[in-house]
Image (cartoon, rainbow, N blue to C red; front, side, top):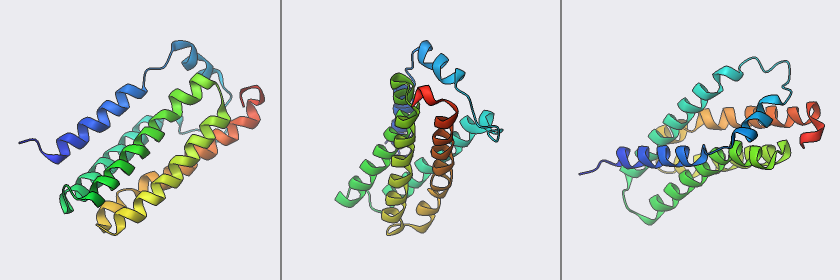
Length: 157
């Protein structure tokens, strides 16, 4: 029998792979953008997001295991999936549209969704809600960073 953590892990992986189909020209656009001087942690961002996604998947497993198959659990799983899709669309959509404003909006949407999800999950499991805390804390930092880049790259709004 397939375990819930396997299904959730596969979904996370598939959404992540599907969203990383970015044209080389779009990557070049992103790489040429000016960054704020205080952005000294950029090389750590992939590791930070990896930890955040592991925590999110673990949170989803806990929620699923508490009440597998109920309508409320399916709605929460849909919200986890929506949050991942929004998060993973940040880079690909922002780069395709070449718009830091779009990136800021997507980042802000993810921040709001993460709080909504955590409040919903808190009704089921405190540990599952706490596992969403890294997302809740990091997302505004990433969103603010993108917003700060707008002033440095006025042609890429």
